[in-house]
Image (cartoon, rainbow over all chains, first blue to last red; front, top):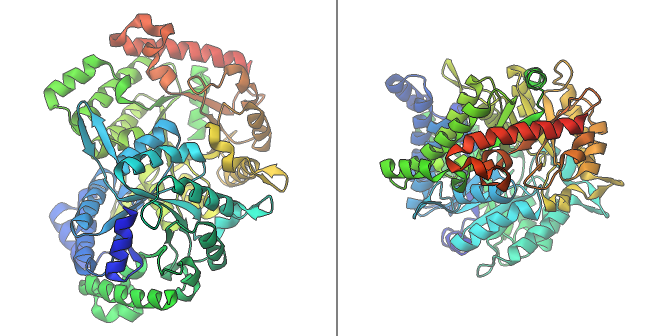
Amino acid sequence: MVNQLVANIKRTNAPIVVGLDPMMNYIPKTICNKVFAEMGETLEAAAEAVWQFNKGIIDMIYDLIPAVKPQIAMYEQFGIEGLKVFQKTCAYAKEKGLIVIGDVKRSDIGSTSAAYAVAHLGKVQIGSNRYSVFNEDFATVNPYFGTDGIAPFLDVCKEEKKGLFILVKTSNPSSGEFQDRLVDGRPLYEWVGEQVAKWGEECMGEEYSYIGAVVGATYPEMGKILRKLMPKTYILVPGYGAQGGKAKDLVHYFNSDGLGAIVNSSRGIIAAYKNEKYASFGEEHYADAARQAVVDMIEDINTARG
Amino acid sequence: MVNQLVANIKRTNAPIVVGLDPMMNYIPKTICNKVFAEMGETLEAAAEAVWQFNKGIIDMIYDLIPAVKPQIAMYEQFGIEGLKVFQKTCAYAKEKGLIVIGDVKRSDIGSTSAAYAVAHLGKVQIGSNRYSVFNEDFATVNPYFGTDGIAPFLDVCKEEKKGLFILVKTSNPSSGEFQDRLVDGRPLYEWVGEQVAKWGEECMGEEYSYIGAVVGATYPEMGKILRKLMPKTYILVPGYGAQGGKAKDLVHYFNSDGLGAIVNSSRGIIAAYKNEKYASFGEEHYADAARQAVVDMIEDINTARG
């Protein structure tokens, strides 16, 4: 799947991913009012509003970008109805030719990790049948358990030719609390990064490994070091835009081939119409605003990778 | 909710929790064959089999124990249908007076963590309505993000009087890969443990904090140190039984009040009938075997806490 991701990035010339992390207050009132009128202020209605919002965005930007990254928490908060829309969003994005990075941050050990891997990337066996469930192309996972927690995901990735992005250095202000602590003179995230590269050796695609890393845009100096520690690792970069990461900070997240990193923006794209810069589109044209924000982001990022 | 947990533990005199982590191969053939005959070898059928299995177990053991811990991965692998059964299992266990510890190991940052907290412990706002979704009493969470990842969970816990168990030292063999690394001469898990105690100060119940910790039974020396570092923190102890943890190893997980720890067994209880010791119950009487295994486990653990 990393080969497909690279192919999509080359085709679109856009090393970016759009985070489909809908919050109720991003969704235009016209959509909300309509579904609430039809279905009441219910979980079903909220989920339907999210779906309509997502579909509007995907339809308007799918030709410009290689991938989307739905954040499952934003769907899970609406329970079963929300998770149905997560599944539907993943399937629809794939229909449109997009790579789906499930931002699920799952992790556990042994048979439990295996069950998560099956749920998100693999197929579950029931009697003599096998079913894909959420069927993402990549999933994000947390490394705190060490190899036992990751190995069952690697097994499924090998079988299904799917991939992971493993948290190395997260974009949030307090990420250093544990991740930056010095171990034998080097910060923990470097040890995690090295281990990610090692896990990745088992799952090599053509140029890059199926096993990627998450490194926040908000820590460019660390990104530079991690890029070198993990040369064959694709880096998923959150924290651009709304969280403060700037394109010029991202130069060193890319390899000299112009590849190796994919930069995420969520709010900055899907809620672009709320930004002064795109306010003239108006709430009803939220998807057009998103398209313009994608165009601008691609240009911004591409100046950075030179 | 920690007050209720302590009350339940005192009432049952059983500092144990039963992990409802059903695997298809734990479920007696009579149940599977019946649902497959009725519904085909489908996701719906698998989920229904899990539900019938769980209900059988809960009905047979609810009077003996304070709490259950459904592992969401085992449900998530069956997709939407599985998650419906997760929700139904949580609700049914609560009806029976049990505390529900959602073993969900969620974590993220900011509004994403807030969405997970809402999904599992809180209420989601839709227009002027508020809905509980999965509605567990406690949830397990991963500390890798630091305070930014935990704070939104703490907010919901305060509002809803619910609780967390934060991963400190996990029970798996490779947990040391990152968790044991020395930082300023002390293993990382001690730093995490101290931070958990600090987070917990904001959410005190009567004797213990609403914010607990996960410390594996398989590392008793570390458990002893962590017990002292986090005196007001309830410790959820996985790894007893099937993973190799023994009751005598658990002495130091308890405080001198006989409280402060709750020991989990999953497979050892719910699949007891597959164990030679309980094989005479037979597959059809899997729930009776589970009850006997609970009785034996309580006795075993209580000799340890003296």
